[in-house]
Length: 496
Ligand code: BYC
Image (tube, rainbow, N blue to C red):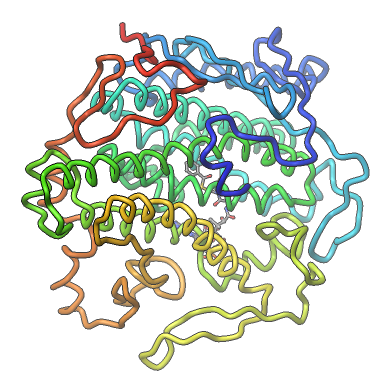
């Protein structure tokens, strides 16, 4: 998906797709002819009330009775697959939506390259595929749990609605993965579907599987950074899974990608609007120096160095989600045809990679070096590099806003090794600029590189709700256009 698409409210279908109408007459909306598979229908209908219990317990706190202007997929053509209307979140029509089948599709990579794509799970890959699905599925409810308290401090009704839209769509992504587990993995799949509702973000005895999904999302800056940086990991991973030789997974992920675009739009524009409010306030007050933090904060806006520190945190934690740069797990999921690379079809190599190499950055003899590694074992490293490149588009657009305002400040992505807990740089002390540090040097600077206590207190002081239609908190500028072109004073959430 191009960066332009991340800036549109209505995601566009992946090219070549033709959307199939969704059946909303069934209790579970779907475009997979659910009513013709009674066993599956029964299994999903048994899971549904447990999902709703989870949503009521762990979903957006305090707004379950509110009417929210939400988009629901109706699955028509690329220009009009969404319908907008007021819905109470627990009544949202979560369902199972797959991109249409491509007749004659073959496996695009790995040792089975060129064979007909699988419609059933190959026995020898069952355990690996199940693990991939569970890891992917686990992130979806986790993010809803992480964001559940944010409604109370929304800087506007527009932003509150966007939060809830992201939340219901993450709920739908859980449905997407649960469909695959229940349909293709029998009793094991049903047990995994249940466990997905039982693990809980941040909980000590039963946490979510991946690190970033146990971090807190305590404020709206975190939410925007998360939806820009962490949802973009979702985009990259889903794009890699969309290449899968297991066709139902490929079709599921192709549709999920269209929804993911909106989440990144919320993140990118959220940060951008925060920057706009800061630059405008600085210019009005005649403050030229972005490092005059005290003066900037007095204006009720977020200083740019603080935003950089927030970005540093979310970027580094999200990079860990790519796993170890050098990974035999990733080599096997690629070779077996289960998980490809980003943009696999457009890559100009043999898609088997038996003899290819890939440059991987690592620490050797006290220096950061680049080494050629067998490409199969560097699949995660490559996806991480693609991710970093994909992030840069949004960072450049943020910098344009600052440049246009005439303020001398530029956001940069920290060095790949900064603040890493997984992979080649785990345990290394590396500055955002890429210098290897002693522990004393790292400690002396950490408050300058990651959000410090003072930052968090200041952000907290800004997180006051703004619920009058058309009004925005001091620290964030209004959006350029409303959702579905609604007017500026539209009441996106009717709070009861
Ligand atoms: N935290 O060889 P390794 C999204 C585990 S986001 C904790 O290094 P591998 C979304 C790993 O599981 C996208 N544990 O890596 C965004 C393995 O454990 P097991 C989510 C970690 O296996 C926003 C061991 O370390 N989807 O959709 O090549 C909102 C050694 O693994 C971490 C996916 O990730 C970590 N950070 O790759 C909502 C796609 N990293 O198996 C949603 C599916 C690694 O030995 N998952 N470990 O017990 C995968 O493709 C792979 O599992 C990973 C890891 C890329 C995550």
